[in-house]
Amino acid sequence: TQSSPLLPVSSFQHISKMAWALRAHWLPTNMLRICTLLLSASLALAAAQPAPDQTAWQLRLFQQVQENAAKLSEAAVPQLLARLDSAAFRAQLSRCCPSVSGLGARELLQRLQGQVAVTEVVSGFPAALSTKRGPDTPGMSIADGLNGSFFQNAWQMVLLHSKDPDSVFHEVLEEYTQATLSPERTEVTLQHWRSGCNVSRGHSRTYPLNKCFKDPAYESTILWYHNGTHVIELGWFDQTRSAQVKLIANKRRAHRPHRELIQLSSQLGCPPSGPPDWAEAYVADGACHGYPRYNASDGWQMEDDAEMRQYGLKPFKVHGAPATLSEAAERGSYAMVNNYLIDQGSPMYGDVSAVFSLGTMRRLAIVSAVDTGFYESTCTGVQGGMFPSLYFNCSASTPFKLLGTMEHFNHLFLINEEFWNESSTLVDHFRRLEGPWGSEPVVGYNLLRYWEAVPAGTLRYPEAVRFLIGSFPSLFGSAQGESLRTWARQRGWILVWSLGPNTGEEGDGTFNFQLMSGNRSFAMNQRLLDPEVLAHTTAAASVPLGDKAVDTFQQLWADVALARNESESIQISNVTMAQHWRQLASSLPDLLVQPLHYGDCDRATTAPECIGTSLSGRCVCYEAVERETAVMDVII
Image (cartoon, rainbow, N blue to C red; front, side, top):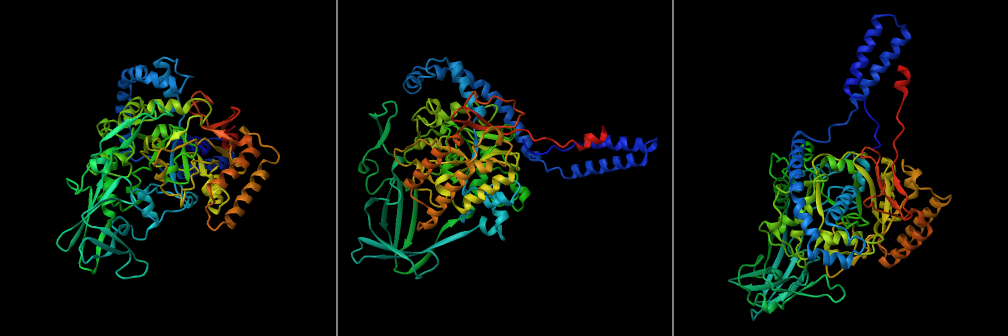
């Protein structure tokens, strides 16, 4: 919305003809010079025109998905209206959402549709470049943003940051282990090293043989070491795979039952029956041996297969290993549709989130009703035990055939509801919209129950990004946070700071799936504009700043920076950061903002976009850039 317009080819063709006509007749020499300069300027503008943001494959793919999604969305309306009018849905809606419980099904659907039209599409990534360059790693960092011209995917990250990309795509890591049996052959001691046998910093642990016990790292699994002929076999069994489950009413929220797993002995027995979900074998001869534990090719090829199967994206010449940036550009960056209005955007995937332009997402985004990575790992034969508390119905989703777009999406509501079949995601959407923002918290497991979006195209700066979100606990008052501010100023984007879940588990800013563990919920309703960055955008006029707003903000920034320097680590406790946030919010209440809701800031789709509203209801919106008129002045 803020990039300068370029003259179309037809314009400079017309100017060229006009210049030659003038030369052939009566215009004086100085006018001929003006026309010649005008022609040169037009040709220069055309030469500077950016590359198309969609390849031929991506354009055809999006058109195919858009056409199919329009049919699916229209066909889903009767079933969706029936769901919104069902007795079960109405009973839940009356308990959670009195402001809309009296509305008819069509009015409810209109609200859902209107909310999606303004809902953020966000991609989370770590502030610093991740040292783990695997297929499930976001392809971005702040430094990439500062130095690049487009939003990267994971494939592009490898090609841009690796001298030998093949070594990343095909990396094999070994673990070195010495297995020693006890004299009674009732226990085994495993000594592990990462970089070679008998090097320093190894660790050891003794395990019982032929006994079941819970994995200390994953509560959802049990381990069983079995003594074979000079070989110790480890079986890793997912408790939830064959677990009996009963629903028990939650006294505090009678409408939301929770699960209770039956005791271990009644599930699997010991020794467990059937093959393990995962197994390892060690030679028990008291000597150190190397065992392959990670083959990057497996992960990259699975990611490659998923992107082709789930989204229909163009195959690489070599499976799981693009050789050029043009090949990698055929794939998109993963994003989520922020239906639950989470203040940090995408907190599970990093401490920075880019919120993409609504217009760009309508034009490029292909949308899945469920996270495709979760679907691939749990519904295509790879049994996962990472999220034992989640219930899902794999038959509700079909790869590629049921995709939507940001214009055609009614069917996605039904698929998402049926896939996550323990509780109603439709009810949860209305619950989150009820009352002031954050009145109803986000339950941890809903952080994974989003719609996933992948753009069939390249997201170029600045036009593809609407604004940035920085994690206040992780980045405010830090060097990385200052770099984020620089990036936003450089591109003319608004920067919003958010408190997010603020659990103290932010760590290095990479994946934080702990947010879904246990029976957790989060308000996630705190956002504040960076006033100094705001002043460098065309939205500055929409937020009147007091005389001392920037000074106050900068002083609070300095206070947090000092606290970080005095702390033993760059990460300050979540209690302390909550105190700093309250001080910031109380000092600058006019800078507090909330996401757009249905009916807010009604503008034409071609107008510069809005990013939210102040707590008083004022719209925070970009304004059109005043265009250059020198060329027209000359012609006149």
